[in-house]
Length: 185
Image 1 (cartoon, helix red, strand yellow):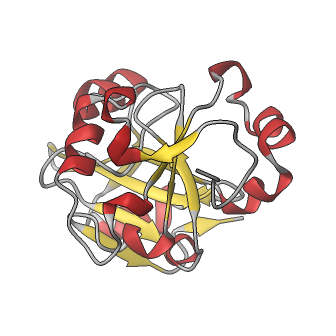
Image 2 (cartoon, rainbow, N blue to C red):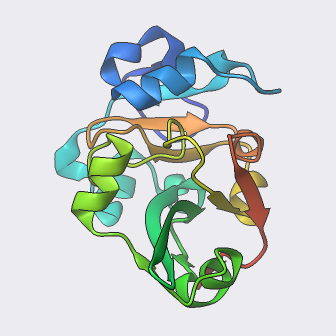
Protein backbone atom coordinates (compact mmCIF):
# COMPACT_ATOMS: atom_id res chain seq x y z
CA UNK A 1 0.00 0.00 0.00
CA UNK A 2 1.22 3.51 -0.77
CA UNK A 3 0.83 6.12 1.99
CA UNK A 4 -1.49 9.01 1.04
CA UNK A 5 1.13 11.51 2.30
CA UNK A 6 4.86 11.29 3.02
CA UNK A 7 7.43 8.77 1.87
CA UNK A 8 7.13 5.61 3.96
CA UNK A 9 8.51 2.17 3.15
CA UNK A 10 5.87 0.37 5.25
CA UNK A 11 2.27 1.62 5.03
CA UNK A 12 -0.69 -0.63 5.87
CA UNK A 13 -4.32 -0.20 6.87
CA UNK A 14 -4.34 0.17 10.67
CA UNK A 15 -6.95 -2.60 10.77
CA UNK A 16 -4.30 -5.01 9.47
CA UNK A 17 -1.70 -4.24 12.14
CA UNK A 18 -3.52 -3.89 15.44
CA UNK A 19 -0.63 -5.63 17.21
CA UNK A 20 1.60 -2.63 16.35
CA UNK A 21 -0.69 -0.31 18.36
CA UNK A 22 -1.22 0.12 22.09
CA UNK A 23 -4.33 -1.53 23.54
CA UNK A 24 -6.53 1.59 23.67
CA UNK A 25 -5.62 2.62 20.11
CA UNK A 26 -6.10 -0.91 18.75
CA UNK A 27 -9.53 -1.04 20.43
CA UNK A 28 -10.49 2.33 18.89
CA UNK A 29 -9.54 1.08 15.42
CA UNK A 30 -11.20 -2.30 15.98
CA UNK A 31 -14.49 -0.66 17.04
CA UNK A 32 -14.29 2.28 14.64
CA UNK A 33 -17.54 4.04 13.77
CA UNK A 34 -17.96 7.03 11.55
CA UNK A 35 -18.32 8.15 7.97
CA UNK A 36 -14.66 7.42 7.20
CA UNK A 37 -14.10 3.66 6.79
CA UNK A 38 -11.57 2.21 9.24
CA UNK A 39 -9.57 0.90 6.28
CA UNK A 40 -8.69 4.51 5.39
CA UNK A 41 -6.74 4.89 8.63
CA UNK A 42 -3.17 4.01 7.65
CA UNK A 43 -0.38 2.81 9.95
CA UNK A 44 3.15 3.71 8.85
CA UNK A 45 6.19 2.21 10.50
CA UNK A 46 8.66 4.89 11.56
CA UNK A 47 11.96 4.82 13.40
CA UNK A 48 11.74 6.39 16.89
CA UNK A 49 15.28 7.75 16.38
CA UNK A 50 13.80 10.14 13.79
CA UNK A 51 10.92 11.30 16.01
CA UNK A 52 12.17 14.91 16.29
CA UNK A 53 10.05 16.96 13.87
CA UNK A 54 12.94 18.42 11.84
CA UNK A 55 14.62 15.02 11.41
CA UNK A 56 11.29 13.31 10.79
CA UNK A 57 10.24 15.55 7.89
CA UNK A 58 13.76 15.46 6.42
CA UNK A 59 13.58 11.66 6.30
CA UNK A 60 9.90 11.02 5.51
CA UNK A 61 8.97 14.09 3.43
CA UNK A 62 8.92 17.88 3.79
CA UNK A 63 5.21 17.89 2.92
CA UNK A 64 4.53 16.30 6.33
CA UNK A 65 5.42 19.46 8.24
CA UNK A 66 2.17 21.13 7.17
CA UNK A 67 0.18 17.88 7.47
CA UNK A 68 1.21 16.70 10.92
CA UNK A 69 -0.67 17.21 14.15
CA UNK A 70 0.28 16.93 17.77
CA UNK A 71 -2.02 15.49 20.40
CA UNK A 72 -1.32 16.80 23.89
CA UNK A 73 -2.97 16.13 27.23
CA UNK A 74 -3.99 19.16 29.28
CA UNK A 75 -5.34 19.59 32.76
CA UNK A 76 -7.91 22.20 33.72
CA UNK A 77 -8.36 23.05 37.39
CA UNK A 78 -11.12 24.88 39.20
CA UNK A 79 -11.75 24.77 42.93
CA UNK A 80 -10.04 21.47 43.64
CA UNK A 81 -11.59 19.77 40.61
CA UNK A 82 -9.33 18.67 37.78
CA UNK A 83 -10.38 17.83 34.22
CA UNK A 84 -8.12 16.05 31.76
CA UNK A 85 -8.62 16.66 28.05
CA UNK A 86 -6.73 16.11 24.82
CA UNK A 87 -6.01 18.79 22.24
CA UNK A 88 -5.09 18.23 18.59
CA UNK A 89 -3.38 21.03 16.67
CA UNK A 90 -1.18 21.22 13.60
CA UNK A 91 2.48 20.68 14.45
CA UNK A 92 3.29 24.14 13.08
CA UNK A 93 1.22 25.69 15.89
CA UNK A 94 0.95 25.43 19.65
CA UNK A 95 -2.10 24.81 21.83
CA UNK A 96 -3.67 27.99 23.26
CA UNK A 97 -3.79 26.53 26.76
CA UNK A 98 -4.30 29.78 28.67
CA UNK A 99 -6.99 31.08 26.33
CA UNK A 100 -9.14 28.69 24.31
CA UNK A 101 -8.50 25.58 26.44
CA UNK A 102 -8.96 27.30 29.79
CA UNK A 103 -12.24 28.89 28.67
CA UNK A 104 -13.58 25.71 27.03
CA UNK A 105 -12.86 23.64 30.17
CA UNK A 106 -14.29 26.42 32.38
CA UNK A 107 -11.07 26.21 34.35
CA UNK A 108 -9.41 28.80 36.52
CA UNK A 109 -6.04 27.40 35.48
CA UNK A 110 -5.03 25.15 32.60
CA UNK A 111 -1.66 23.57 31.88
CA UNK A 112 -0.07 20.67 30.07
CA UNK A 113 -0.42 17.44 32.03
CA UNK A 114 2.76 15.86 33.32
CA UNK A 115 4.32 13.08 31.28
CA UNK A 116 3.43 10.54 33.97
CA UNK A 117 -0.21 11.67 34.00
CA UNK A 118 -0.48 11.76 30.20
CA UNK A 119 0.98 8.28 29.71
CA UNK A 120 -0.59 6.74 32.80
CA UNK A 121 -4.11 7.94 32.01
CA UNK A 122 -4.02 7.22 28.25
CA UNK A 123 -2.07 3.93 28.24
CA UNK A 124 0.06 5.40 25.45
CA UNK A 125 3.76 6.21 25.17
CA UNK A 126 5.07 9.74 25.55
CA UNK A 127 5.72 11.16 22.09
CA UNK A 128 3.08 8.91 20.54
CA UNK A 129 -0.15 10.09 22.17
CA UNK A 130 -3.01 10.09 19.70
CA UNK A 131 -6.67 11.12 19.84
CA UNK A 132 -7.77 7.59 18.91
CA UNK A 133 -8.43 5.52 22.03
CA UNK A 134 -8.56 8.26 24.65
CA UNK A 135 -10.19 7.43 27.99
CA UNK A 136 -14.01 7.50 28.01
CA UNK A 137 -15.50 10.88 28.74
CA UNK A 138 -12.42 12.97 28.01
CA UNK A 139 -13.09 16.15 26.07
CA UNK A 140 -11.22 16.13 22.74
CA UNK A 141 -10.56 19.61 21.42
CA UNK A 142 -9.56 19.68 17.74
CA UNK A 143 -8.34 22.72 15.85
CA UNK A 144 -10.46 23.37 12.75
CA UNK A 145 -7.33 23.45 10.56
CA UNK A 146 -6.75 19.74 11.34
CA UNK A 147 -10.23 18.73 10.17
CA UNK A 148 -9.78 20.63 6.90
CA UNK A 149 -6.84 18.48 5.70
CA UNK A 150 -7.35 15.41 3.48
CA UNK A 151 -4.90 13.37 5.63
CA UNK A 152 -3.11 14.17 8.88
CA UNK A 153 -0.13 12.40 10.45
CA UNK A 154 -0.55 11.77 14.20
CA UNK A 155 0.88 9.45 16.81
CA UNK A 156 -0.04 5.79 16.97
CA UNK A 157 0.04 5.40 20.75
CA UNK A 158 3.70 4.37 20.57
CA UNK A 159 6.87 6.26 19.67
CA UNK A 160 7.42 3.81 16.83
CA UNK A 161 4.91 4.23 14.04
CA UNK A 162 2.38 6.90 13.13
CA UNK A 163 -1.19 7.00 11.87
CA UNK A 164 -2.38 8.78 8.75
CA UNK A 165 -5.99 9.76 9.38
CA UNK A 166 -8.43 11.62 7.12
CA UNK A 167 -8.88 15.07 8.68
CA UNK A 168 -12.67 14.90 8.84
CA UNK A 169 -12.43 11.75 11.00
CA UNK A 170 -11.11 13.80 13.93
CA UNK A 171 -14.45 15.62 14.18
CA UNK A 172 -16.23 12.27 14.57
CA UNK A 173 -14.12 10.90 17.42
CA UNK A 174 -15.88 10.47 20.79
CA UNK A 175 -16.37 13.77 22.65
CA UNK A 176 -14.67 15.76 19.86
CA UNK A 177 -15.30 19.46 19.56
CA UNK A 178 -13.85 21.37 16.62
CA UNK A 179 -12.63 24.83 17.62
CA UNK A 180 -11.28 27.77 15.65
CA UNK A 181 -8.08 29.21 17.07
CA UNK A 182 -7.12 26.27 19.29
CA UNK A 183 -3.74 26.18 17.55
CA UNK A 184 -1.84 29.46 17.49
CA UNK A 185 1.39 30.44 15.76
